[in-house]
Image (tube, rainbow, N blue to C red; front, side, top):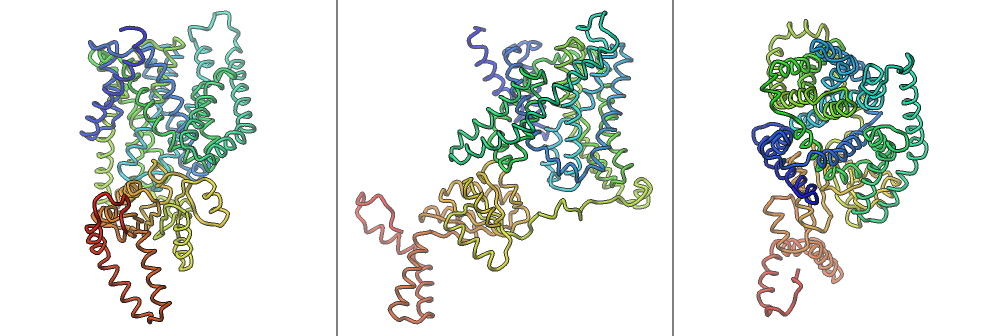
Length: 600
């Protein structure tokens, strides 16, 4: 392959193969991630095709790691974690300790070094956040109490791995890494860890003091410019710039730098828009990350070492699924929810890939150990939907035997349904898209009769003004991923769209109805064709602005001429019933080409 086309061929091949196999995986109810890994295997050097350049793919994958960790930081909420801390914090930590211990013992039985055994144990303890979130979303569990606990569990685990990524090079080398010389002093481990921690503390302190103010200030001013492209560029520049700067200036991993950058932005009210704008780039580079991981895997390991692959899978299931289920029950949580959490954690993913890559880069792992971890990850991810279905069936079966369930749970477990976790969740509310003159008038009318409402507004200045007035608002584009969900459409009763773009409005209606098919919809139109389009999709009412203005002016004209109110109302209703037909007839009388504007 010519050197100057390596990047283009690798990216094109990765995206094309990832799409084909990811789509195929989704069609058989498997996570698309499975397809991405298979695509990587077929493109990699261990395949006859050998289309992709591993070196180029690995560099692109670094961007994927940065954006993945940036996304984890954006969604990290200390307040949400504190609400479920009594379960998530001890549960996740003890589960990781159990999984690391089992992985360590398995690696030692294979005569690996202590350093390799520690890294192997950590690699099999890190469940994939991407896979778990996809599983929860597909089953509408993400916004439930159990879903919140699972996310809190993942956050604790992610934080532990992020810290480990910073400390591991020093710890592993001190435990016998190849770069450690025999003359290394006995206290070298303590010194290495102390220096590493000082660098981390310095970086976090700088970001906490300066970055916490500078980054939100920058994004706020960019948002006020009204340019979506500039805002997206600003988000990507912050994510990549902080990650690379942290590595260059403080010697910490790009993963930690990206995570901290995400946490800094998460404290701003711009975090949701930042997440939605960065999501397409994050998804694209995450695909390249998983493809590059697949390219590094030698599939022959499954044929040559099936026993080791199977034993690794068993350790993952015992250390992640079984351990987390038992810990949840010990923490007095319902058995059914404990089984579901255990099933969702019964796999490994992106952090395991990063850890395995770290092990190879510092010489603790060989390619064989990395291939074992990648093979086990592929097997467990494929198994995960089946594991989750099995957990649901077991939970349903146990529910038929209350006495047995009481014995297993030992007592009634606390269900956090009445906590403040749901205190701010609106119910039977109205969602208004746009807060211009129309939106403000509609909001005022609803507030006068006590109807709760949430307004989605894409203008930063308008959103800020609404909050000063005490109006519940969400800043962002309602069609972008993650924005509309903040208005809780599942529980809403009315959707009012004042946006001028009919296709934009139709997309919003489709998104909302996917979550709430019975919601009432009032929408604005600008012509007969638009009105017909909305009537075909059965909105509650589609109103043409100019026509409603005409009805209002006709009403006041008749009243000004002295006609009684009842008579005037009857005439307006007659006009409403036949105005479409009259418009069509009138337009047919006009000569072709005499006007470019439709008569309303």
